[in-house]
Structures are given as structure tokens and as C-alpha cells.
Image (cartoon, rainbow, N blue to C red; front, side, top):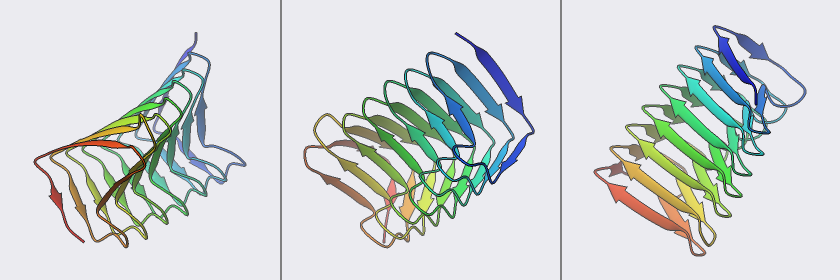
Length: 175
């Protein structure tokens, strides 16, 4: 089990994820910039733990942040924008939290929870995406939203389908 601190680092144009955490490893990234990644800017899987604080993630080819396979991700005070696909994608038993972050201008859903993933969004803004601001789909997928603004997205502000579960507390959702 390894632990890594990454601070004030710029990662651009990698052939793959900008940051990848797996196998019970832990990584804390503070004030990092991740841009033009061929895959996710930040990818956590196989029970890895990733915390992103005050990071900027732009122009990812996949979701900016992907959490899968029992991994845990915390996104705090981050900016995610202009991704070809989504902002945060949580699936296959991944667990994520998004706090006081901005997710804007994504090609797909700003936050997408699928296939048994779970996510909590608090104090954030999800805006101006091409599709739904938030998409929850699939049996055992769950999302809790508190004090979050969802606006100006091309599809639904919030879309729950195919057995997904949603808990909404004090939010502003508009198209």
C-alpha cells in the first residue's frame, strides 16, 4: 500500500490517464493542472483512493474523473471543464464525493453514476454541458445532491433511469 502527494504539478498531453491510482494505493493531488489527457485526467480503480484538491482538469478525451472497481475519489474545490465526454463518471462499485467544485461544458453528462456506483455532490455547480447535468442509471446506482446548482445543460438538468436512486436536498436545477 503506497501513498503519494502530488502538489503544484502540471500534466498535459499524456497517452493515457493524467493520474492513475489502483491496488489499495492512495494519492493526494493539490493545486495540480491536468489537461488534454488521452483518457481520464484522474482514474481510480481496483480499490485505489484518490483525493483531488484545488485542481484544474480540462480537455480530457474521456471523463475528467473516473472512479471504478471499489475505488474511492474525493473532488474538492476543483474545476473540470471542456471535456470531450463527461466530468465525473462513477461506476462498477466506485464511490465518489464532489465538494464545492465547478463542472462545465462537458460533451456528455457533468456527473454520471452507473452500474452500482455511488456519489455525493455538495455545494457545486454543474453547467453548460451538451447532455444531462447529472445522469443516474442502473440498478444499485445512487446519488445524493445537496446545495448544488445544475443549469444550462443541453439535456435534462437531472435524469434518473433504469433503477437508479436519487436523494435531492436544497438545490437549484434549471435548463
